[in-house]
Amino acid sequence: MTCHYSRRFTGFKGLEGGESRSTKFVFFRASVCFGDLWDCETSVIAEPGGTSRRHAVCTAFGAEIAKGVGSENFKLLYDIYHMQLSEGNLIDTIRKNADVIGHYHTAGAPGRRDLDEHQEIYYPAVMRAIVETGFKGFVAHEFTPKKENRLESIRDAVKVCDV
Image (cartoon, rainbow, N blue to C red):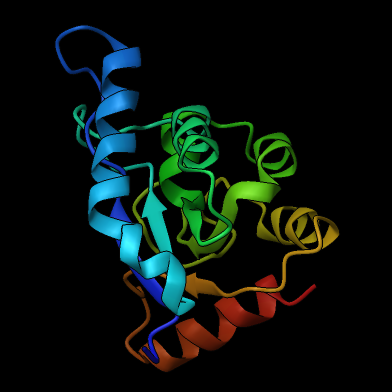
């Protein structure tokens, strides 16, 4: 198999029976859905975030799932924009969970726009924290550019994140 990453959502939080039951449900789904992938060098990147109250919207819940699955091929997508909105404390959270994060997304908050002086996340500090963890993967820019020249917005984002 040539695909090394497959992005999937973690599942649902808040099933009847509490968070423990939700976690067990996700472990079961992961073992059934992804079991064969571990043998063919494919990693699953699960996103524990989103705006829906039914998704796992905190890093701790996603990290518990990743550790429970127990495979180096199961990692989290840390969407910096979503995590700023849902839990904040980005740098400390990244440092504490670096072992289970396999991919990052950026976007300006609020508004999911450019990474500029009009948003509240200071990306150079966040990117330095990511580099300090030893991360060697990818950071993707997932935002809607404000500028008419969208390529210019992407270039600017790369410059902001190049630490």
